[in-house]
Amino acid sequence: RKEVEQDPGPFNVPEGATVAFNCTYSNSASQSFFWYRQDCRKEPKLLMSVYSSGNEDGRFTAQLNRASQYISLLIRDSKLSDSATYLCVVNEGWGNQFYFGTGTSLTVIP
Amino acid sequence: DVKVTQSSRYLVKRTGEKVFLECVQDMDHENMFWYRQDPGLGLRLIYFSYDVKMKEKGDIPEGYSVSREKKERFSLILESASTNQTSMYLCASSPAGGNGEQYFGPGTRLTVT
Image 1 (tube, helix red, strand yellow):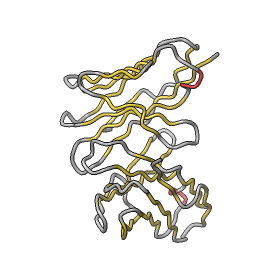
Image 2 (cartoon, rainbow over the protein chains, first blue to last red):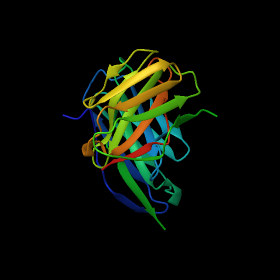
Image 3 (cartoon, rainbow over the protein chains, first blue to last red):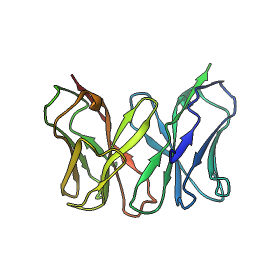
Protein backbone atom coordinates (compact mmCIF):
# COMPACT_ATOMS: atom_id res chain seq x y z
CA ARG A 1 0.00 0.00 0.00
CA LYS A 2 1.35 3.40 -0.96
CA GLU A 3 1.75 6.01 1.73
CA VAL A 4 0.32 8.74 -0.48
CA GLU A 5 -1.97 8.28 -3.46
CA GLN A 6 -3.04 10.73 -6.12
CA ASP A 7 -5.04 10.55 -9.30
CA PRO A 8 -2.33 10.94 -11.97
CA GLY A 9 -4.69 12.60 -14.41
CA PRO A 10 -4.01 14.12 -16.84
CA PHE A 11 -6.37 16.97 -16.22
CA ASN A 12 -6.89 19.13 -19.30
CA VAL A 13 -8.90 22.23 -18.52
CA PRO A 14 -9.66 25.49 -20.36
CA GLU A 15 -8.29 28.79 -19.16
CA GLY A 16 -10.45 30.26 -16.42
CA ALA A 17 -11.74 26.90 -15.20
CA THR A 18 -11.70 25.71 -11.62
CA VAL A 19 -9.93 22.41 -11.01
CA ALA A 20 -9.53 20.32 -7.87
CA PHE A 21 -7.04 17.61 -6.98
CA ASN A 22 -7.33 15.15 -4.15
CA CYS A 23 -4.74 13.09 -2.38
CA THR A 24 -5.12 10.40 0.27
CA TYR A 25 -2.58 9.28 2.83
CA SER A 26 -2.41 6.04 4.76
CA ASN A 27 -0.87 6.99 8.10
CA SER A 28 -3.35 8.64 10.42
CA ALA A 29 -0.47 9.90 12.57
CA SER A 30 0.94 12.05 9.76
CA GLN A 31 1.85 15.49 10.99
CA SER A 32 2.42 17.89 8.13
CA PHE A 33 1.19 18.20 4.60
CA PHE A 34 2.26 20.05 1.49
CA TRP A 35 1.52 20.63 -2.16
CA TYR A 36 4.53 20.92 -4.45
CA ARG A 37 4.58 21.97 -8.06
CA GLN A 38 6.93 20.43 -10.61
CA ASP A 39 7.37 21.87 -14.07
CA CYS A 40 8.56 19.68 -16.91
CA ARG A 41 12.22 18.74 -16.49
CA LYS A 42 12.51 20.88 -13.37
CA GLU A 43 12.80 20.17 -9.66
CA PRO A 44 9.76 20.22 -7.35
CA LYS A 45 9.08 23.48 -5.54
CA LEU A 46 6.80 24.14 -2.61
CA LEU A 47 3.43 25.54 -3.66
CA MET A 48 1.85 25.67 -0.23
CA SER A 49 1.68 23.98 3.12
CA VAL A 50 -1.68 22.56 4.18
CA TYR A 51 -3.08 23.39 7.59
CA SER A 52 -5.97 21.82 9.45
CA SER A 53 -7.98 25.01 9.20
CA GLY A 54 -7.44 25.20 5.44
CA ASN A 55 -5.45 27.90 3.79
CA GLU A 56 -5.64 30.08 0.74
CA ASP A 57 -3.02 31.79 -1.37
CA GLY A 58 -4.52 33.83 -4.15
CA ARG A 59 -6.23 31.47 -6.57
CA PHE A 60 -5.06 28.39 -4.66
CA THR A 61 -6.88 26.82 -1.73
CA ALA A 62 -5.65 23.81 0.22
CA GLN A 63 -7.75 21.73 2.60
CA LEU A 64 -6.94 18.93 5.01
CA ASN A 65 -9.47 16.38 6.21
CA ARG A 66 -7.84 14.34 8.96
CA ALA A 67 -10.89 12.17 9.59
CA SER A 68 -10.92 10.95 6.00
CA GLN A 69 -7.16 11.28 5.55
CA TYR A 70 -7.21 13.34 2.42
CA ILE A 71 -5.79 16.61 1.20
CA SER A 72 -7.18 18.74 -1.57
CA LEU A 73 -5.95 21.55 -3.78
CA LEU A 74 -8.35 23.86 -5.57
CA ILE A 75 -7.16 26.13 -8.36
CA ARG A 76 -9.56 28.86 -9.45
CA ASP A 77 -9.42 30.86 -12.66
CA SER A 78 -6.77 28.58 -14.19
CA LYS A 79 -3.94 30.22 -16.12
CA LEU A 80 -1.78 28.72 -18.84
CA SER A 81 1.15 29.07 -16.42
CA ASP A 82 -0.55 26.69 -13.99
CA SER A 83 0.27 23.80 -16.33
CA ALA A 84 2.53 21.50 -14.31
CA THR A 85 2.52 18.38 -12.19
CA TYR A 86 1.23 18.83 -8.64
CA LEU A 87 2.71 16.61 -5.97
CA CYS A 88 1.07 15.81 -2.67
CA VAL A 89 3.59 15.40 0.16
CA VAL A 90 3.12 14.08 3.68
CA ASN A 91 5.50 14.05 6.62
CA GLU A 92 4.89 11.64 9.45
CA GLY A 93 6.68 13.78 11.98
CA TRP A 94 9.51 11.45 12.85
CA GLY A 95 12.66 10.51 11.04
CA ASN A 96 12.20 13.60 8.93
CA GLN A 97 10.95 11.42 6.10
CA PHE A 98 8.66 12.93 3.50
CA TYR A 99 6.34 10.79 1.38
CA PHE A 100 5.47 11.94 -2.11
CA GLY A 101 2.50 11.09 -4.26
CA THR A 102 3.17 10.27 -7.90
CA GLY A 103 1.77 13.61 -8.95
CA THR A 104 -1.24 14.89 -10.88
CA SER A 105 -0.63 16.37 -14.31
CA LEU A 106 -2.49 19.55 -15.22
CA THR A 107 -2.60 21.17 -18.64
CA VAL A 108 -4.46 24.44 -19.03
CA ILE A 109 -5.64 24.93 -22.60
CA PRO A 110 -6.09 28.35 -24.27
CA ASP B 1 18.56 33.08 -2.24
CA VAL B 2 18.56 29.50 -1.00
CA LYS B 3 20.34 27.02 -3.14
CA VAL B 4 20.89 23.31 -3.55
CA THR B 5 23.35 22.37 -6.25
CA GLN B 6 24.13 19.03 -7.82
CA SER B 7 27.41 18.20 -9.48
CA SER B 8 26.03 17.21 -12.88
CA ARG B 9 22.80 17.75 -14.82
CA TYR B 10 23.42 14.82 -17.16
CA LEU B 11 25.64 11.80 -16.69
CA VAL B 12 26.22 8.71 -18.81
CA LYS B 13 27.98 5.74 -17.24
CA ARG B 14 28.64 2.15 -18.16
CA THR B 15 27.36 -0.88 -16.31
CA GLY B 16 29.64 -1.77 -13.42
CA GLU B 17 31.16 1.68 -13.02
CA LYS B 18 31.27 3.39 -9.65
CA VAL B 19 29.27 6.60 -9.76
CA PHE B 20 29.40 9.58 -7.43
CA LEU B 21 26.61 12.15 -7.29
CA GLU B 22 27.37 15.21 -5.21
CA CYS B 23 24.94 17.61 -3.57
CA VAL B 24 25.74 20.85 -1.75
CA GLN B 25 23.35 23.16 0.11
CA ASP B 26 24.08 26.62 1.42
CA MET B 27 21.21 26.95 3.91
CA ASP B 28 22.84 25.29 6.92
CA HIS B 29 20.09 22.66 6.88
CA GLU B 30 20.40 19.64 9.12
CA ASN B 31 18.50 17.26 6.86
CA MET B 32 19.51 16.14 3.40
CA PHE B 33 17.86 13.62 1.11
CA TRP B 34 18.46 11.64 -2.04
CA TYR B 35 15.49 10.63 -4.19
CA ARG B 36 15.07 9.04 -7.55
CA GLN B 37 12.17 9.92 -9.78
CA ASP B 38 10.77 7.56 -12.39
CA PRO B 39 7.66 7.92 -14.55
CA GLY B 40 4.60 6.48 -12.85
CA LEU B 41 6.49 5.87 -9.60
CA GLY B 42 7.01 9.41 -8.37
CA LEU B 43 9.80 10.37 -6.02
CA ARG B 44 11.20 7.52 -3.97
CA LEU B 45 13.55 8.09 -1.07
CA ILE B 46 16.90 6.36 -1.30
CA TYR B 47 18.68 7.69 1.80
CA PHE B 48 18.49 10.64 4.10
CA SER B 49 20.76 12.20 6.66
CA TYR B 50 19.79 14.29 9.67
CA ASP B 51 23.30 15.16 10.78
CA VAL B 52 26.91 14.89 9.77
CA LYS B 53 28.01 11.25 9.52
CA MET B 54 24.43 10.11 10.20
CA LYS B 55 22.35 8.32 7.60
CA GLU B 56 19.09 6.47 7.39
CA LYS B 57 17.84 4.11 4.70
CA GLY B 58 14.84 5.20 2.75
CA ASP B 59 12.51 3.01 0.74
CA ILE B 60 14.96 1.85 -1.93
CA PRO B 61 18.54 1.83 -0.58
CA GLU B 62 19.69 -1.33 -2.36
CA GLY B 63 22.60 -0.69 -4.68
CA TYR B 64 23.32 2.73 -3.19
CA SER B 65 25.39 4.17 -0.37
CA VAL B 66 25.81 7.71 0.94
CA SER B 67 28.36 9.87 2.65
CA ARG B 68 27.97 13.01 4.72
CA GLU B 69 31.30 14.23 6.03
CA LYS B 70 30.31 17.90 6.12
CA LYS B 71 26.98 19.47 6.93
CA GLU B 72 26.58 21.10 3.56
CA ARG B 73 27.48 18.12 1.40
CA PHE B 74 25.67 14.81 0.84
CA SER B 75 27.00 12.31 -1.66
CA LEU B 76 25.21 9.41 -3.30
CA ILE B 77 27.34 6.50 -4.46
CA LEU B 78 26.38 3.77 -6.87
CA GLU B 79 28.94 1.09 -6.11
CA SER B 80 28.41 -0.80 -9.37
CA ALA B 81 26.00 0.94 -11.69
CA SER B 82 23.31 -1.12 -13.37
CA THR B 83 20.87 -0.28 -16.15
CA ASN B 84 17.93 -0.27 -13.71
CA GLN B 85 19.56 2.67 -11.96
CA THR B 86 18.96 4.84 -14.99
CA SER B 87 16.81 7.60 -13.54
CA MET B 88 16.51 11.22 -12.45
CA TYR B 89 18.24 11.74 -9.11
CA LEU B 90 17.11 14.62 -6.94
CA CYS B 91 18.83 15.93 -3.84
CA ALA B 92 16.94 17.97 -1.25
CA SER B 93 17.54 19.63 2.07
CA SER B 94 15.32 20.82 4.88
CA PRO B 95 15.73 22.29 8.34
CA ALA B 96 15.47 20.03 11.36
CA GLY B 97 12.02 19.04 12.62
CA GLY B 98 10.31 17.63 9.55
CA ASN B 99 7.76 20.40 9.31
CA GLY B 100 9.70 22.58 7.00
CA GLU B 101 9.86 22.97 3.28
CA GLN B 102 12.20 20.79 1.29
CA TYR B 103 14.47 22.55 -1.17
CA PHE B 104 15.48 20.57 -4.21
CA GLY B 105 18.48 20.66 -6.46
CA PRO B 106 18.00 20.74 -10.25
CA GLY B 107 18.47 16.98 -10.54
CA THR B 108 20.93 14.69 -12.28
CA ARG B 109 19.69 12.58 -15.13
CA LEU B 110 21.80 9.43 -15.03
CA THR B 111 21.87 6.99 -17.89
CA VAL B 112 23.60 3.65 -17.39
CA THR B 113 24.38 1.80 -20.60
